[in-house]
Image (tube, rainbow, N blue to C red; front, side, top):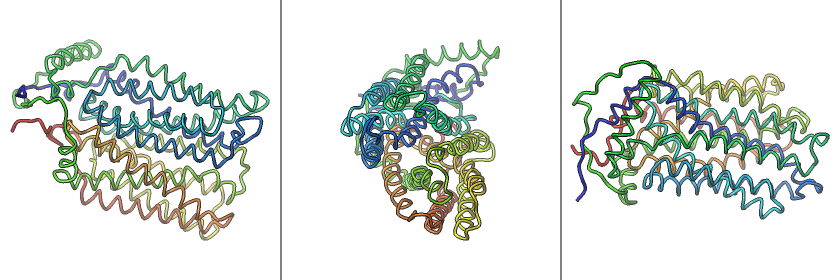
Length: 477
């Protein structure tokens, strides 16, 4: 017979003042997105080098297939690790997923053929995909409700720091005067492994989610852990923590796991509107971002005659604009509110993309104007995209939180990662900007659609406890 416990753990975690302990959580869990951005950018930058005979000697098509394997691995990893994260705990899986990434990216640096490259890229994606489920669920359950929006957006937006760093780094590592043709690109992957080791050393000190522990027959351990966190936060801040009253107490019927039938019923019956919302937000941003990123250098070289050797460097201002958007706009998601900010950012991004498309079609846009408008559009779109992950991670019950993140990430990434680049690539058609403009109009239309869906189905989750937004399935009422 399942045991029932009464607990105030969620309220105790949410009332904690911000402290160095929370920065430990952010550094230990959040910095992995820098690795993801670094991975994707580096592979795009070294694609032409891998096809050279004195390097790996595989074709550019085979390099592109490696990207498909990476996306397939990420989708598979998200689903597999997502299910295990809800079943076995956040900490075990965010250590395992990072460990898998570490081994796989080192192996990629020792690639000797197209087939080995594909296999290692799949396993690298497997680890990164697992991170999305394990990390987003853990962060939401450890960060106070009043700062959850800003922290989530800033962390997800840090992907673009990795992208900008990767773009800058590629220029150095691919310089044959500094590194041999078959050495520089390998060092890029080894660098990712070094960063992963540093993250792992910090991550070891991040605790398991007390919210997960309280449900899985480990409530005494959860109570002890929260007490230790409270002592540390109080010591670091010099503040005496306020008492949590009986009104903040919830009663939980503990469980070992949640079955697939209950997961499906919760997602598609009990939370159907939120499922539609989550899928729309994530699929839209995945389509737009993958379409733009995978054809970024092609547009610069074909439409604006930028030399292919320096095209990747334009990702530096693009990446910085994306990161600053998520960082600077993030606080408004906790104050102005989720529904207003999410719908506004999607809509504003749509308008700027439509203007960009119109100017491209009219032939009145130069390289500088293109980059300025693109950076403005994605300064806003970055906050919108990160808010998609925030929405999914905070609007479903604790027992299936990681699985919900994994499911919507896998489906949206699979669709956006496949359709977006293929469609944009088809529309490029040489140096005629009209085809590119059509692609941006489609992207603008999808972003506008997501804005409308957010207005209709959005959840006003700002400043609320996770348990208020979506009561645990195990809660006794």
